[in-house]
Amino acid sequence: MTLLPRGTKVHLAFGFIDMRKGIDGLAMLVQGVLRQDPFSGHLFVFRGRKANLIKIVFWDGTGLCLFTKRLEHGVFLWPSNVEPGGTLMLTSAQLSMLIDGIDWRAPERQWRPAVAG
Image (cartoon, rainbow, N blue to C red; front, top):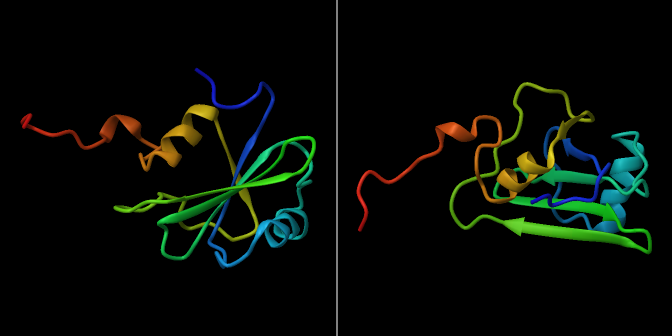
């Protein structure tokens, strides 16, 4: 199952942002810092300093959408040793794993319980 319409790109923004920013502030970051078009129909994913909260900005053709997820346990894994202002392209499957709090970089290394019950 695919999460996104065909041709939709997912841009993971390097670094972290002030998570107090709303939809307009994030759209301005997409345009000014990432040098992308926030109205392209692509998804732009941002993470806060604590790493347990992400925000996704998306233009659906009629308006900007803002999706937010906070993990109650754990953190969203992000690329390290990169300069803020860049992005990394993710696949739909990688985005699904990221949203679920799974290490999208190496999904086969996920923790599994040793014993049921």
